[in-house]
Length: 488
Image 1 (tube, helix red, strand yellow):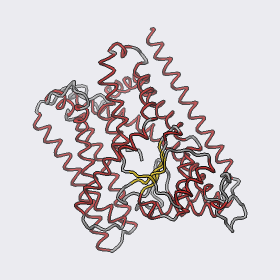
Image 2: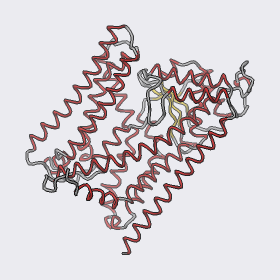
Image 3: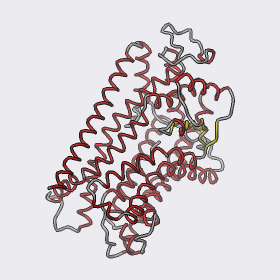
Image 4: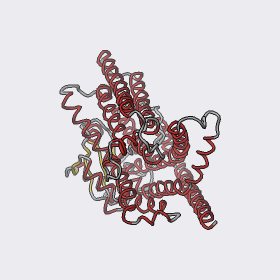
């Protein structure tokens, strides 16, 4: 659900120092920017239309077409980031916006213009992929002109709703704090403290951004809502509302947002409600409840804020890495500054990205399996001799305790249905969630031997405690180094 490409684009634009001066030939640089955006768009349209043609020719979306479309979409997303990184660091786009066009010192407008080429590439990539997505999902192509506009509108709303808090951080730091308290930046831990406080406040208020920006409506009263509310009561889960998330039936998914109990929403997409059985929807709802029951959201908040603060505190180490890169023979000291800055900046971003990908991915995959187990419990009768299975809706107030084979099968069927309706191969890898096949295999082993669950839960607890201890220790070392450097 997190718009990772947009987050990386913001890091490339604002987190890695870019050339401040505009290029010597501004019209030529602008032509290169337009050409890069057009190349990304052409690739997306070629992939989307080819996929739609293959599906229409065969009458269905085969596994090979689905896989090709998925890999092609990821390559286009990666290509957009590479092209945008070169636009910013190789062709001097920030210098064009700030100096050649005279937007330096404006509030928010300069930041919006700097990130505009990536937003344009992303929007055009969504447009091109739209035709392939609908073909893979088996949706009709009638009234495509009106549908594509609505699709792009919904995608932009969904993406920007999650990124608005990040934009608020940049605006508050760059345009407000510097003007009101200019001496604050001279403090050694000022930047880290700003990020910690602002990040915590914005992430805590993120449900408001999502509620206002995403097209949602309360789930209507009826058997399904009462069933989900009963699961919430049995698990001690509190939320502000259960919402239907309007995706024009293009997304089969669910999510929970909000760290604070009185400021929390559960969102179920329209396609998920239409495509799954009530028992499967209840299992997916239980999965989202599991994220809260195991306190995943506060831990993610702690990890993300701590990781950002650590990166800020370790900025001297990045400066040393850049100096080391500048001394390599492949980076000519006599080469243009923009080229050296691009190589050094991309190398730093790659190191940081690889570390985040490895650590956050390992943590997220473990949390997903914990939530999967909870989703099974939400529709389990708790009897080790099941089947026969009895529905807990008939026993209001019975607490959620353990899994049963039928509960595992219901949740596994829900996972398979979500993957199938989203056009995702079961064995497709995901760095944050793991493949659907591996998650179903894990649950099948658990159904055969429920005694394995306590050992799995202990492993996850040890991992999260070890990671927290390591992060706190790293923050301590970075803080001590910064303090020693300040008094020295």
